[in-house]
Image 1 (cartoon, helix red, strand yellow):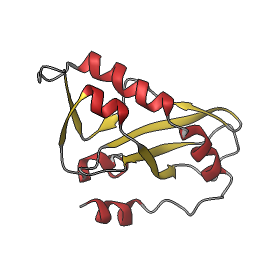
Image 2 (cartoon, one colour; image 1 turned 120 degrees about the vertical axis):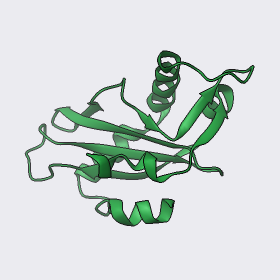
Image 3 (cartoon, one colour; image 1 turned 135 degrees about the horizontal axis):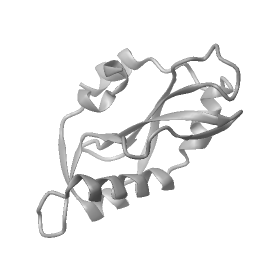
Image 4 (cartoon, helix red, strand yellow; image 1 turned 90 degrees about the vertical axis):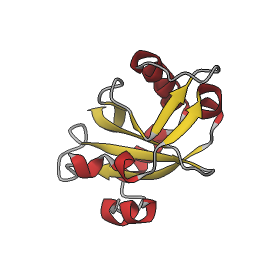
Length: 135
């Protein structure tokens, strides 16, 4: 699963919580781990990157709960290259970070992009090429 965790390929970023929550993220790619399976049985990972430098990256696994209905596989496991900071500059603890990460993820149109990938509307996600661009 290590190759799917693309956040490790990006430089670490420190970000105040309020800046992170206001950042604009764009879809960077979605990987389907088992495309040969029938609708309703597929899963994968999606990656989103902030539009300004330094790049902040979010990545999480998803699965189909029903055909074409995608959900986060585990909301407690959103990968990021960002260390979130409180307003006074202190690093946020893990539990507080999970809340902030899920807030941002839930505002993204990620299900639409995953469904587009499942329907074959997007090019297959080439993780190796994308990781080379990130480095």
